[in-house]
Amino acid sequence: TQHADGGKWFEAAQNYAAKMYQFKKKAAKAKEAEYIEKKKAELQKMREKGALIEEGEGWYMDDRGEFYVKPGAALDLDIMVTDLVQEVIEAKALNLDELPMLKKKAKSFMDKYHTGQVVTYEEAQQMLEITWPIGLMECICRRERRGMYNDPMAHTCFSLGVGLYKWERWPETFRGITFLSVEEAKERLAYFNKKGCVHTLWTFYTPYIGGLCNCEYPTCLGIRGRVDYGIDGILYKGEYVIVPIPDRCTGCAECVKFCQFGAMSMSRSRNKVTVNMQKCFGCGQCLVHCPNTAFKLLEREKALGVRDHW
Ligand code: SF4
Ligand code: SF4
Ligand code: SF4
Image 1 (cartoon, rainbow, N blue to C red):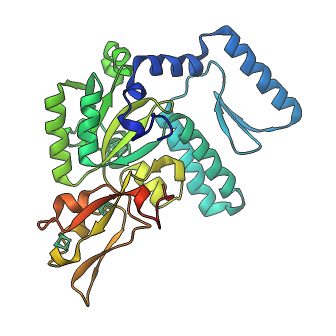
Image 2 (cartoon, helix red, strand yellow):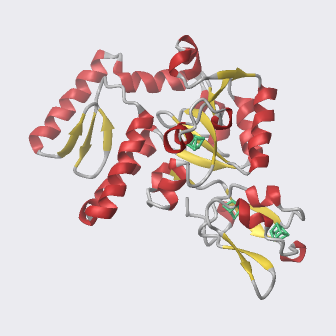
Image 3 (cartoon, helix red, strand yellow):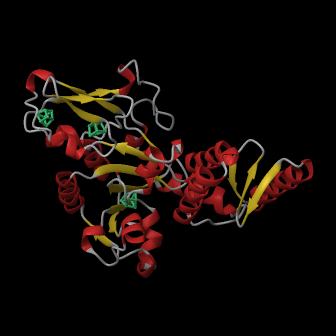
């Protein structure tokens, strides 16, 4: 609810709006000379005080592990995510002392510039109604990590909103983009949902929402980064958690196949499914695929034990 006036933040139209996009781009790309100068002066002061502990091309990190894009710099967000996750993976294997700071740095970058959140199928449908235009692009995770180049099965990322007006001018840069009507996009979404993909939204300079993805573990860097590498800001849990309805469960175990977060198991003695609510991301895929509707989605805020687990 941080970026909406009550309600779910991603249902607030302003988070998809031209004004938001231009404002964020202005701040980031710093067309305003005044803004650039102010930020440059701040940066210089930090250097002098020794509070700047790392600097890269276009970015810097202060001694609290806060990540910033340098004034006027334009970072490739996808490349930056990959680099930051790579740093965490390497530190896990080779340098545990550095791990807490690197995780902080990654979280800070993601929270500010490029974070994700799990949404249910119904929420994803609503998102497609709020924003325009809608493009379908090749999934960078499937392409880079599974070698799925020019494969229609890897066209799973909806690009949303006014950012696309710029992209339309350079289609060759945007991974085989196809523009879709709302109805076409919903049909595609239904297809991914049936396949068992987890729907995730993505910000491009938070809170501007520019992407709606259809993901799978372990290919998705967002799911993997959160579940396996413990990078909190890379992908937040959804607004719901799942609650089983044991009386309706016949123990077929179909739902377990569709949980990409390792949150479900079968109780051998009861022949019923069990959910670990701490691990549940609220994607709703178990409910979608249960033949007996033996689950309900509960608002996270009402689930006392996990209401603060995002
Ligand atoms: S977030 Fe999901 S759909 Fe988007 S690029 Fe990664 S795996 Fe592909
Ligand atoms: S799919 Fe439904 S009926 Fe089958 S184990 Fe899961 S909850 Fe029970
Ligand atoms: S238990 Fe169900 S809702 Fe929770 S993460 Fe697994 S599939 Fe998604």
